[in-house]
Image (cartoon, rainbow, N blue to C red; front, side, top):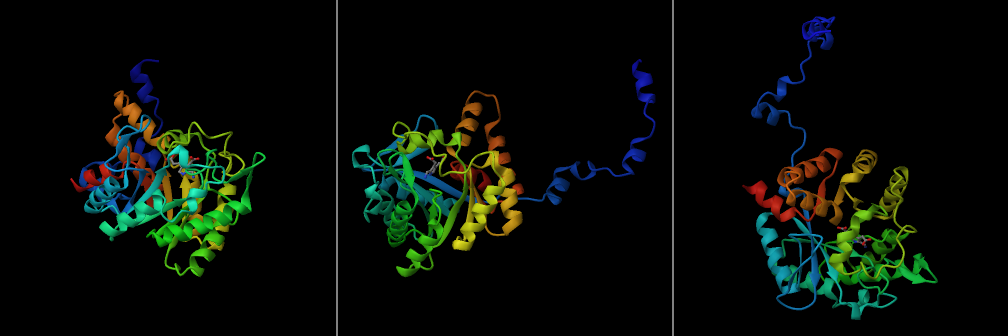
Length: 342
Ligand code: PBG
């Protein structure tokens, strides 16, 4: 069959096939694409996770996360000021604790003056308008890198919950506005809510890492907080199995019943279906964490010239909005905020 015969092989005109519908009509110009655009990304959608380290005047790079740094508290305050100027509503802090200060039980988590709490105080003091989200989990503090009390190879749920509920109160006292439990222990949201209320922090909110998956995408983060060499085994007995979607719905339902104000899904891009499900099911503020491995992949491919990094970052954040996110924790936050401004 030559080319001419192939064209005449069309039995109906395109208008007959589509019934006259032309979906390309509204894509023809920038103004019309803008007019029918369903989702928008704004600086209000961005939460910036930052890494902390002890000391003064320290800004350390992280091999697997080019462009991301660990900051000592004094410099973290400067960064928070910069973020506030850019209009970023909140930051989330993650500490890199000196290995010598770690122990089996992660006891430093109960120090009112530990790195997270010091940073919250300093940031609240200098930039009161900035929302502070603190991660409450044992892994930065334990010598084995697990998010819970480890005994005979088991993560002990209830003892862990007791510890993180106490730690949450210390974090609230230091100025945290939102407590984000990232450990996936059963009952932690309710225990944290009770502890906060009893201590007089009923206005402090809880963003539950409801669907936190046992993911390989956290690799660079573990370098950032210094747990990569320490972690024994994996976290499969407490994080959700990547094969499961319905289980995420049960986790979220449970967290909301226990008093969570917001839900989070983590990692982000590989779990858009989970974000969509949770938003559709519960209609509550829902967030995604575009994690370290997602960041590293985009940066690495962009550095090699294999993708257009700037466009991929924007597209990935728009995908979160389309899936139903109210906001995104992303290491790209300041960069995106700059671009949205310009
Ligand atoms: C653990 C925690 C993790 C991250 C934040 N808090 C995962 C882990 O180490 O198992 C990952 C964040 C990222 O990868 O960007 N409480």
